[in-house]
Amino acid sequence: MIGMRRLGQAGFACAIPALALLVPHSASAAVSPTVNAIHPADTSGSPDPSAVVPPGAKFVSYHGVRVTVPASWPVIDLQLHPSTCVRLDRAAVYLGSPGASSTCPAHAVGRADTIWLRPATTGQKAPLTPQVRTGGALAAQVVVDSAGHDKQAQFTAQGVELDATWGTDSSSIDRVVATAVSSSESSTATLPAPSPAATAPVPGGTASAAAQAMSAVAPSVVTGGTTFTGMGFDTCAAPSISTMRAWLQSPYRAAGVYIGGSMRACGDGNLSASWVAQVNAMGWRLIPIYVGPQAPCVNGSGMATISGAAASAQGTANADDAVSRARYFGMGPGTPLYYDMEGYNASTSCSRTVTTFISAWTSELHRLGYRSGAYGSPGSLMTDMARLSGSAGFASPDNIWFANWNGQKTVSGQSGYPGFPDSAWANHQRLHQYLGNIFQSWGGAGVSIDVNYLDGGVAGTPTPGSTPAGTPLGVFSPGDFTGDANADIVGVNRAGDMYLYRGNGTGGFTGAGTQIGKGWGMFSKVFSPGDYTGDHKSDIIGITPAGDMYLYHGNGTGGFTGPGTKIGRGWTIF
Image 1 (cartoon, rainbow, N blue to C red):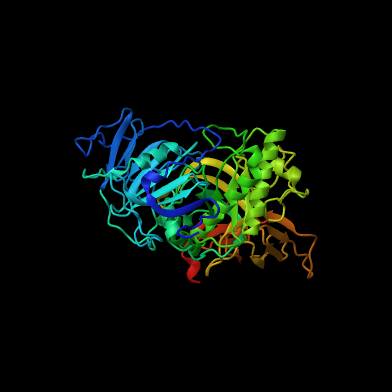
Image 2 (image 1 turned 120 degrees about the vertical axis):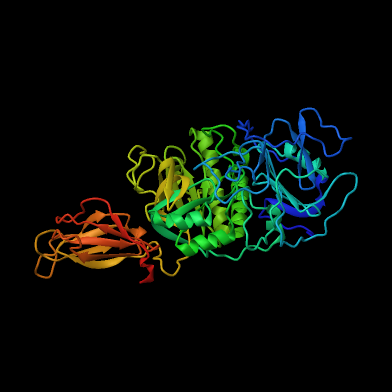
């Protein structure tokens, strides 16, 4: 089709006047957001003395563009409040660009009608010449992502971009876009100096769909998936590069980031192909998360839900959109993409709708060369999928990620959920979110996170100075580790499990190996210096990919006296 570019199977891009976009896009659940307004800027004045503000509305101007929005929507100046999280699940108007470190929650799901006016992305080449209209409408280059409930309009002459999201349908934000006119009023927020999109990510909100349509797919900086065993965190919005660097002092080496979806409550923020490349080079592994429509029986309100009659088609469409988003962020084929399915009250019909959706999601990802993952509750999604796993007609995800905040740093032993046995997805295919909604600070940078233990698929390309997850850390002798005067052998396998083999003093062993630890996959090197503490007991040392050194005191009987202690940093130079 001349003059159009497909966004997966979910959207299109073309240069048309803003007034032309008045076709609503429906979903199946209403959104009734509760708004806690930050002190709004004064936007009640009209830029045109002859203009009359419609009842129940107000004018908002930003650098030559004026729109009319509902009077109840708070207007948030991100220059005055740079740490404000751009929330897409609360009706609001955002102006300008936020700071690099927004105070976003660990987890949020849902979508509301929002408008965000900000500087247009520069350095992009439009595929068509904008059409200019008179009579008050502004020429705009517009992209609609129906699957993502997102619309962007770039007002080229004014250098302003309008990002809009919707909850139930797009009629409300369509009406706002249709009111766009030129304004002579000084802007509410100060316009920052533009920077090329190739070197600067678009802060906050959903990454510009206009930019996605106007530029080539980002070169793959993550060429596929890998298996990672160790600790990870997830949060609503991608932390800044400086925060990710500071968090190399943490025990985490994997980070969950939301890449798209109609129920995504926090936008891209710092997330970009450049961000992915930089954190991957640091040694981070990523868990790409996509959150779209939810189960018809979801435990929560304000979320669009899957249609029972169209579950398969919706699963396919959301997979297409997820792959489009992954490609935009430089995540190439082989990358596992995790669908966030919030907890629900399982029933025969609801469970059938959900599993049909997930099966279609998986099949389409496989067709496009990506791996499939699914996040959910062990009592609903995991149980429903485990029941069907291996059966004809159900395409099972390659990896599962279950949320059970029991504080157990393990991917097994979920005895409270007999329908979700340890034997399901047992071949390094599991992630466990075991703590939620906590605030932690490492290296002076604080983030609200959920905490995970992983032994499954993640996005990441091994980099120099780091050990790829799933690589054995080797076999070594700590000397006499058990106190019987005989030398022993220790080995660490691909899963990060540590085993002790007791020497018999005559060139053999006293029996089979005994597991004495797990989670050692967080280290790139593990070895024993012998007795390092002067207590006549052998110790073990681990060095992380970031170069942090940890000492584990041996107890003289084949174990440890407690958790490791950090004793150094910067050991990557060796």
